Image 1 (tube, rainbow, N blue to C red):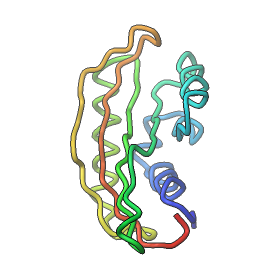
Image 2: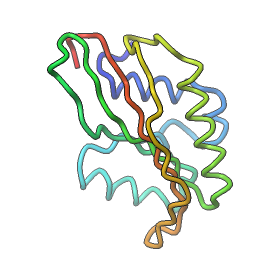
Image 3: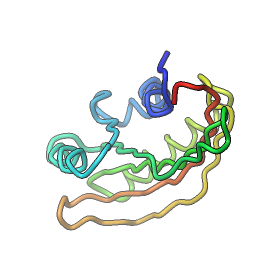
Image 4: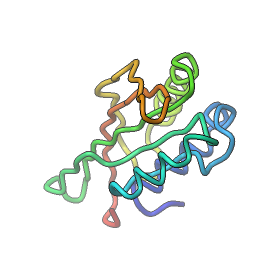
Length: 138
């Protein structure tokens, strides 16, 4: 079992049958730590579409020992329809899996649809989720 929230999210998404039926393999679910990771993720776009990228936006450590984190999870695809299908798979995955691996709360806060990135020539849909994680090893 993963010991931190980003690892748990990765495990949940890569173990979901619908998500994995839409991406080629688990390497296409990619956590972005910084700009260098964004560049590495973008280098995958030519051969690895559809692709999921995710990163932490904020967290609130004041709720010790609960941790409230905002994550942006983005579905990327060559067509808007493919990006929508992957987005639906991600939302369904987290709606089905309440109280999972230390995550006690999941909420979809916003959806930014129909984002076309001209540089990488892909459609992206940005999902912003709140996750509450109950563990000291954040």
